[in-house]
Length: 405
Picture (tube, rainbow, N blue to C red):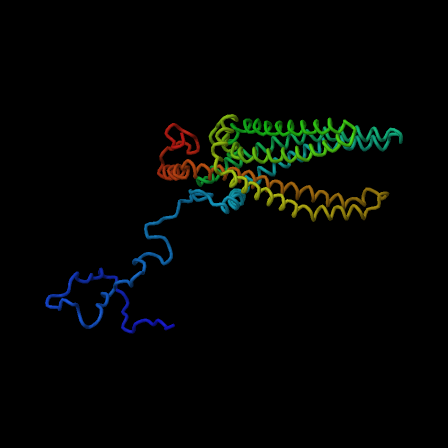
């Protein structure tokens, strides 16, 4: 194979004047067969054959191409799969006081409520068991376990409400950050406040449906187990396994189809019923994409929380095993300190995880509307209008003149 070398008589192109185009025909007096001295060389300054035009970057877009605008959190275009996975982290970094601060306050309130309700009940049950006669301890333990379980329902209810409140705040933050706005914590809560109780209603509706489904399954398993024979036991086990898998599949399906309901309630100010219908419509054709993003983010957040909290839990277990059960209270101080560290790290990691998961749902909503309804054009128009001082209506609201209306 030969080596290609540059011609020795090459001259750098000149850009001061436009290149001269060769005449379309031979010069006057030239033979009709063309010149006999070889092919006509290209004019000086003309680019070689196949080269990009002058001014166009090599391997890049044409000179007239411009990237989509990015006034704030994300570029105003449909998001790729990777962008949906990593953009929630930018939500946390961009406005940590409003996002992480809100999550930390909510997590702290739920923790204090748990300690205030479950702590005294657990202490009373433990003290009652230790002072009860030996022949009565079994009954007291059974009743005490049920009482502790019932007391734990109070912080569970509060955690559901807290999750709904945080979702509304994070949805508002993502929507405003996409437009380049940065709200303080107080203003962010005031902006989300009118729609928070509708969010709580939606969350309680989901929780109620799940409890009813699990209750029916438990009742069916119990009735089959009460038959008392081997056949009834086998049917109870099969019903429990198959029913549990069915409830899990239905729960994941409904959670995916209604993933953007909180965003619709807050940003479009819809009722719960209207938000469910619209979420069903927006996710049509994008079910597996939505499910994949939600699943990956949830798994990653849970792994992160476990990786952070597990070392502290191991230290606490080791310190507790080294303490003599008959020792004084002072001997338990290191263990108590390590347990406090476990609680603190768990609250912080949980706050970070809740912000990321809530932001993911909001970003999925923006992506779906950009893909199906051209929301990116509405957002760009809003940003341009506000920069010129014009009064532009909220781009997230559905109006009669909107393309999707």
